[in-house]
Amino acid sequence: MSNKDLLDNIKKLREMTGVGFKDCKLALDESKGNIEKSIEFLRKKGIAKASKKMSRTASEGLALVKEKEGKISIIEINSETDFVAKNQDFINFCKELSEINFITKSDLKKLNETKMSNGLLVKDNLVNLIAKIGEKITIRRANYFDNLNGMNFFYVHSAIEKGIGKIISVVKIDGVKRGSNDDIGAKVAMHIAASNPLAIDKDRIDQTVIDKELEIIKAEIANTGKPIDMAEKISKGKIMKFLNDNSLLNQLWIMDPKKKVSDILKENSLDKQLKILEYIRYKVGEGV
Image (spheres, rainbow, N blue to C red):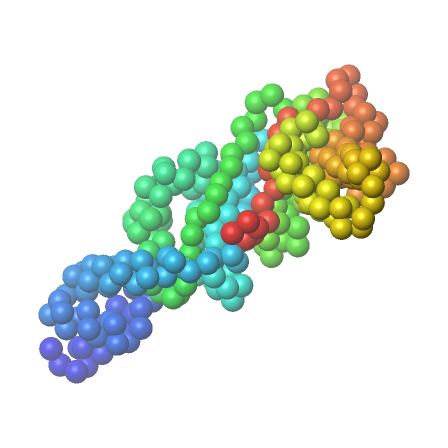
């Protein structure tokens, strides 16, 4: 193979894979100039590269939401840095994943085994993207809301594009009438994005979370040197405030702090009392 042919093949291989000059030359040398075998070689090398990167922490990235016929899917894809989260290859990958996520109803096992537009499986494209970009990328979590027993709404905080952002919330509400009181849905979704409730009502907050908070409260009070009986009263008041502040129905409405979310639902109810059935809030990297 002449130098010109080699350079042409390197250029072609780089365009097809996004891999650097040296790796492309090595792949072509190993495969005696065969492009298809070179791609296979690079994919195998990409898998090796990817495995080394999987021990890193990926706490940046994007959340994406897709809505169609009243159904909604949401997915979070993480990267190590915000720089990569702004990379167009990463964004395009995430967009296609969001479409597939909707089709697979947020079943990540099915999603990973689904072919993308280039004919490769999601899991293989993920490996190739890791090799190309040089960062750990993970498909972290996904949720799907069907259009049964209620109406779905979503809110994207500071969207970088339609349906793409760092904080996204989805809520399903029963009792909503299209064209009558459906404007409340987006407002509740916005409230959830801003206020980050732990559960719909205080009796649904995880007991381990409550116990941990109570332990912290009691330790804080003990450090003040207050008598035990007074400390008990104070701790009860503080834990009740914690429960109210972190349960959606008891939170103060962000658009009118004189009212609770439960009050707003009552005010906007028509023939049927509005009821929040379920919700989810994704903040990119939270809890990683």
